[in-house]
Length: 454
Image (cartoon, rainbow, N blue to C red):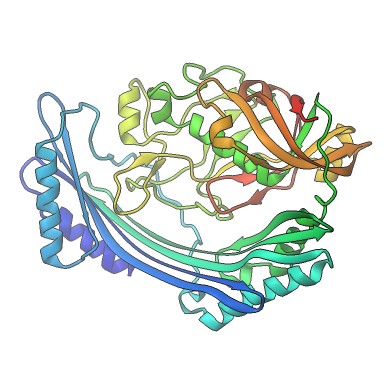
């Protein structure tokens, strides 16, 4: 399919007329999901789509005008009609001196092993069997597991091709698979939930036993949870929570957000914003990352981007438009992203991770001594302000006493500011864990956080 898509986008670009610039982005995707319940199939769904998005840029003395249109019909007639629509939309657009297509920047694309042929041929019966085995293992993991909210298997493949009149041609394909469970543990009238997962490029890379054990542990260890006393303490984020924190940081390090005044890091490049041992990178070349890709959504080669090095803010991620708008020597970092062929390029991180430290999770707890392990948070969208940096979220987890995990805790809030949190990191774990999405997690200890409970 990739070769066919490449031929198609080259053909569309070949229809350019006069001074206009054209970019054609084509995508083919196929996704499947199986969800089971009590030994039977709850849902079984598959979805497949093909489409092309066309951008037309009309240069002018007062700035360029951009038009966009898309179609899910790959016929010649539909493609020509979509190009005409994009041209028409461009003619009505407001001139913008920063709008335009990406230009080749000389960065050579990496060869990444992201595609598994087996995903396209993996039998539906085997997908169902994997989901059923996950459910069985969770139920058998502990007598207190009374039910599951979900037990599922999912997979998907994506093929993309892009070409433009600027001389850019790019194509890639990737696959992804996952199993996911939410267990419900009960003890008397009390119930607690916990999730478990495993991700990979193909089904044979998934670990169903690990996913089941995680769901059992995260649900049962919360039974008997009480509300803790309010205090200031050291908080240890488990990898899942750290991944959420990194996703928040990724939004504040988005060049587009910075230019719009929506980032707490605006005008702080070169400043010490975190402890010296904190190194944050966006590395879409890491094949372990779910969002790994050799090209961005404008066809430029992706690259490893050091955002915070030794605690010092190094810069932001950009696509070609945000880079031009930023001015000076700013260039695209190969960080254009799209939601699919129905959208124009935006800006975003694909594979955020903290360079791991030398401590195991157990060693982090030992170094902390007394504090709280947070295993899940809630209210992120309302409790975190990316402009002021205010951070206040609901949480649940376990007490840390004498360097070991203790009693379960619930219904409390942890609060600080992102600026202060980065400067009060006391330990970084070595347990990097990639999740579906754009960030990895690891165990992270932060001192001086406010805990509001009883």
